[in-house]
Length: 160
Image: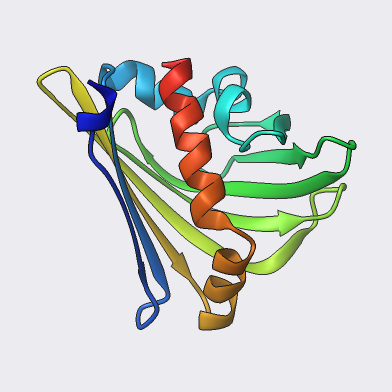
């Protein structure tokens, strides 16, 4: 059954954009919660062997999530998500940027736009990630973003 679920990952260098479409065999409320509640996010957001550790999360417009991806030797890679708009259970947007351990962002970052829809008991998440520069997009790809994010989404399937 799982193999029949939509998964699409596209990179458009011209527009400096990554498009990710993923379908889950779960209802909308559960998938929404998995993206917006720290106790669920930390179960899947980092690809193994990394773990996600949220230090602060305030899911509201103007709020932010400050978290680290913690490696097997304990090394921490910090990032922030600053929430810009939230339409409950259908869409939210945020600025994502790497940060230091004190939550000072390493700008510029990338703008994420996540849309959620449900049909026939399956929830589709459409993610559009716009980078401010081609250089940042290429850096993301070189760091293994596609492989890491794909692995994280597979972990989310297991959590759901």
